[in-house]
Each structure stands twice: as structure tokens, then as C-alpha cells.
View 1 (spheres, rainbow, N blue to C red):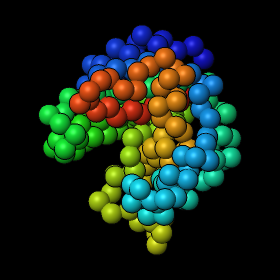
View 2: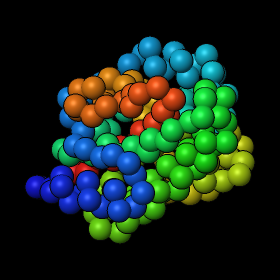
View 3: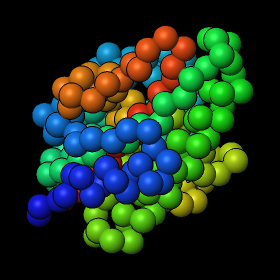
Length: 180
Ligand code: SF4
């Protein structure tokens, strides 16, 4: 299927993202090094969420899953921080990015039969994830992060000719979606 990159860009910007561009599908390389970072639990979500490792699946399963898709877009939200301790801006920007991404994915799912979203940060649809005691409450809505699938986000951006770093005191959240 042919997709119009410019239309997707326009849509993303109109929804509040600061940048968007086509994802290079060859950049979807699932790396043990990223999984190792998850395992070290630096973001405190490892083994605590259905959309994080180990529950989200192996790197091999990630690779098999994306083989079904032929097209992808990256969307980003960049903010300027007063300094590196500007936690308010960090929190607000993450929230804005996640909300906008959820809205974008909902819109895409209404239009296309199959969408694979990969967000920024762990799935936060529920205040407390049901993992591991009960099944995911919203398996059709839950969104794993690019990292949780095993992607090195800065490399994906670089290979897609999209900036990952926008300069001193900037903060950027990056997500992507794939279509068949
Ligand atoms: S939708 Fe809820 S239960 Fe499912 S992964 Fe997200 S937070 Fe966990």
C-alpha cells in the first residue's frame, strides 16, 4: 500500500508533535544492548508491565512482528528546559507526547486494519498495570515503547535522517508507528 508521508507529517504537526518523518524500515534492528538496559531496570519498569520486557516478548519475536509491516513514521515532541533539572518541563512534555501519541494511534486504528505503535516510556493506560497477576486490561490499546521492543531510538532516528538531539537544554520524546 502507498502512503502519503507529507499527509502524515501534516497530521502529526496539527496534533501537537514538533516533528515527524518517514521511518527507515531498515533501522528496525532489535538489539541485545537495549534489552540489557531494560534488564538493569534503570527505568524501574522491567518485569512490572505487560508492555515491557520480559512480558512484551523476545527480540526475535519483535523482529517477526515488524516483518508484517511495510511503512513507518516517526513522531517527536521537543521542549526547551530551563536547565537539566527542569523536571516540570520533562514531566509535562512526556505527558503531552504520550497523550498526543495515544490520540494519533486511536485515529490510525480507526482508519487502518493493522497498526503497530511503539511509544516513549512504559504503558501507562492504567494507573497500576495488572502484570503479572491478571491479563492486560486493554490489549488492543496497550502501547509498548520503542526501547521495550529492543530498538535503539537514536540510531533509528539517525538511520531515518531525523534528528534525535535538538541542541542544548532540549528534550525530545520519540515514538513511531508501523502500517502494513
Ligand atoms: S493497558 Fe493497563 S494492564 Fe495493559 S499493559 Fe497497559 S498498564 Fe498494563
